[in-house]
Length: 145
Image (spheres, rainbow, N blue to C red):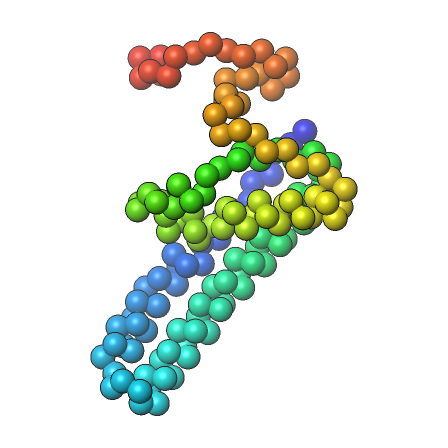
């Protein structure tokens, strides 16, 4: 049974996007191969490594708490590659690291003895009752809303 905990998704790439854009513009205007341009590229590298560190730390903490608290974990089997093709959502999906979350859950479940169940993406979970398991037959039209 879920404890209704909500974890806010940090979006470090979205937050650092403007600063990265400024550094990239600055580097493009500098003389190629000189020390100032190299320093700017080093700043960008440090920023990218800081962003990836924040993402990794969040995913490690989240997966560890989930596996330690629950012995049965069910997640939706998403086609992340197909979702990344959407030009509007691709950056947000890559920033959250859906595939890495699933990968870490899989190996941590083995490590801590929990079970991970992959639910099909077309399974009608929103139409199935949580207590009785009764499936409602609703059409998904705007008239019903």
